[in-house]
Every structure is written in structure tokens, then in C-alpha cells.
Image (cartoon, rainbow, N blue to C red; front, top):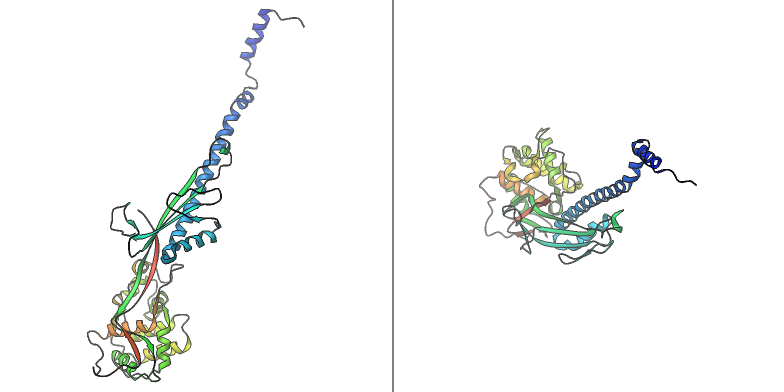
Length: 351
């Protein structure tokens, strides 16, 4: 093949430089490897971000579960993780390294003080414990970058505290009834109510063993007080008679028939003039700001029926207690210094 003259070669080269056809194809071919690499990095980064958010949500849930079972925090954390698809997690010391497919979890109990400086509110090992800190470390997933770098370790931490949200107390209460007749119990409760009672031992046993859902009780009390569209706190800002309180307790779902009848009997015997300041009777804390019927899911606020009745009658009775002969014995009941009921709420906390 004859060689082209030098002038002709240079002319062809100049025409090639001036030719703009197929420039896009050339640029695409040159930039495609970089675009693919950047896309791979973006996919991996987005995947790691989503994976970390999922790990944080799982850690939050594990911390809340542990705070509600603080005496068995380790078992509660492992159960929460297993129920959410992470059955291979293992409890380890702080800073433990995770293995592929096996997250490392650290569980520390202690005390949380909301008044302390941010960053030092949780004191590990503080007594008595009221909070749990859960840390989870797992190896992240790389879809494209694993050939270029080692997968990163994703670390998340959550602290949850359990705190009392609803409580009431009174100086004495009934724990058990042993006699076939209950003259002393009728005298005590009847004296507080300002009437005569004739409840039998089974009535009292039913009241003693029955727990009342406090939020359902406040909802039933709102109906009795003709209050609609209000919050729990607005109901508790009003007053109610002991009869209304007993009837509202009887209206709570789940109360058995005999106990319901005993409560309704007490309501019928109670005076309508003696009123109870409900905000002195119950305090629901932060829950009280919710509207009636907006009961938080998973939150149990229970109280003993007999203790609730005794507290209500004592408050309605003002300064006076039951006038009984001090020499008289009490064969029908055991007594204790205080009766109280409380509910706990768990929160994810800062610091």
C-alpha cells in the first residue's frame, strides 16, 4: 500500500480535529468508567445510611424493652432483637468487635438524671437503676465497594429510662381477708363513707384482687361527669363524689360480675355531698395532656380496686379518719403502712 505524502497526512489530521461528529459517543466512552464508579459509591453510601437508620431504630426498641424489664435487661435486649430478625446478636463488653452477620451488643444499666449536664446524665452502674443504655455494632453491607475497601462498622447507641407516670397512696390498706364475716371491714369503709355497709368476705376479696386500668377509669369518670372533648388532666382538675368514682370503676371493661355489683353497692351507699379533688387523687404526669381515649399503646396503668376506694373515701372524708375503739382487734384483715400503685413509661433520652 503506497504511503501518503506528508502534506496529505497533515491535511487528514487537521480535518479529523475539525470534525465534530460522534463527539458525544467519544465523551461517553471516556467518562463512563468514572460515572459508573461514582454511581457505585452513591449506591453504597445510600445503602449504608438506610442500614444505619434501621440499626438505630432497632437499638431504640431494644433499649425501651430493656428499660421495661430492667432486672432482666440482657435477656430483654436479645429477645427484642430476635423478634425483629436479628437472632445472631451476642452480648459483649463495651467496644466488642462484631463479626459478619453477628452484631455485637453492649447492655449497661444505671441511673439517668435529667437535671445533670447533657452528656453526663446517664451514670453507668448507678443505684437503684432506672435506665438502660444499649449499644449495637454491626458490619455494614457494601454492594460495589467491597473490592476496593473493607466494609465499615455501623455503631448505634440508645438510652431509655423508666419513670413513674401515675400514682396514688394512702396510709393503710387491706391485703387479705380471712374471716367468714366482715364486720370490721364494713365498719372501716362504712365509716369513711358515712353509711352502714353489709358487704361479705367475698365482696372484699374481689375488691382486693381486682386491678383497675386507671386510664379506662378516667375515661369512664369523664362520662359520669358529662365531660367530652377533654384531656385526662382536665378530668382530674374537677371533683367527683365517691359514688361517681365507684361507679366509674364498675364501668371499666374486664371487671367481673361480683366485683362490679360490690362497687355499684358502694356507690349507692356513698354520700353525694362529699367530693374528692381528683388532682389530689391521681397524677398521670405527661400522659395527662393526652385527649380522652388517646391511650398510649403498650402502656399499662393499673391500680388495686380496694386501694383506690380507700384512697377516695379517705380524701372525701377530709381530716377525719374512722372512729373505732382502739382496743378493738382486727381479725378480718392484714394491714400495711402504705398502699400505692404506679405505672411506668419508657423514653429514649439524650445524653
